[in-house]
Length: 469
Ligand SMILES: NC(=O)c1ccc[n+]([C@@H]2O[C@H](COP(=O)([O-])OP(=O)(O)OC[C@H]3O[C@@H](n4cnc5c(N)ncnc54)[C@H](O)[C@@H]3O)[C@@H](O)[C@H]2O)c1
Image (cartoon, rainbow, N blue to C red; front, side, top):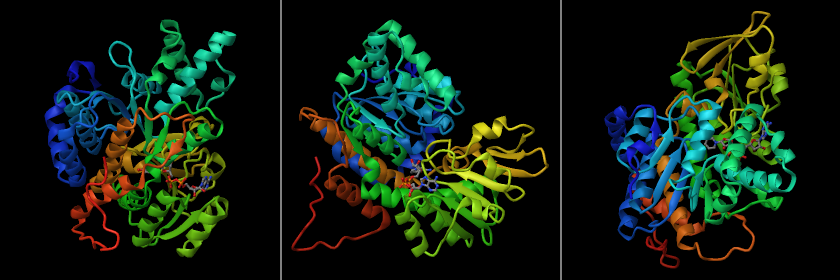
């Protein structure tokens, strides 16, 4: 049964008409995903599957949700970032009864985690069979929920490793939530895990968290790394970012990039996309890297590879794209050029040490315009901070273009259907896998017409366009 809009929590359901207009327009740019929907929906390959999605609640995500729904899934959804929801779009999806939506723009940490919990709890208490995660927050919640129950049963206290989680404010919220749930049903998370067939993780930071669990033997269900598909890492993460980093910067600042000195911290696929955009815009682009291989690649592309400390005083714009924390710290911000721009493209909002900046004695922030703040220090010098250290392409701009999201979301749909189809295959030890190569191939095939490409078919090794599912 399709969920009634009253089950959702969005900013204003009255904005559904505006949201629907945006979703319809976006469908026109996601022809590959729509072709996949039209091709697979008659067979409803996701019939019977309860899916929880944790992914930025944007117009492109709405097209993904409505594709999964057309394939037969029963969906609950929340955003993977407290600030990335397009409120009218969230209203449109809830109104259309395509999914129960728990998302609005500008959530407190309590609200954010409440939404994650609601999205994985069906009326009657059941959890998801399949998870579509971005950054791994839901996967993390389920795992710490299980840890909490086991520890409480054995020792009467939460596991010590939960108490030291960062950031402290979020870990307090999670602990409270787990405590409340434990009082209502002390086996809730263990029961929920029994029915999880697997998770498809969208982004590199989430895959990193999954691989940590895999290596220490604590992973509780199979995981698919969408990020490791070629059409994701080498197309969305490079060319999508190349487009959206510029879009975000220009929406925020309307600044001339030619002639500026820009430091990109991290030369993974996302950092590479940022560097390509800066170079193409005429900026002088520098790169900071911790991995010797990626540093060498950056050098081979003609970027000066350096450290943030070496070039602090000459850089006009700093962009982080590492997935790491504390990449730009107080000691750096204090010595930057006057009004240097500081922004983040990585998934977590801890690449720039915002906590220390907020607490630093004598600092003052004023809002120059939405998502652009000027922070002034006691000595009078100042920096310009974008989106309070959150993903600048999504918060200041409109995120990656619909075409590349269509490719990544087609991978998601095909991988969810693959997991559901093979749900009864026993896995002795859950692992993190890359989806089968034929899923990559199929996602590419759906999108070749979108760029007017014609494929050469080898007579020795033909590709069948019907080979998946
Ligand atoms: N903004 C978006 O739309 C978007 C899209 C996809 C991925 N992401 C996120 O962007 C981040 C980067 O993604 P990726 O796919 O390039 O990851 P990646 O792991 O391939 O690359 C990260 C790079 O940063 C380097 N690095 C790590 N710590 C560093 C430090 N302290 N200083 C300098 N370099 C450092 C690593 O060596 C690595 O080469 C992740 O958090 C990912 O989730 C954002």
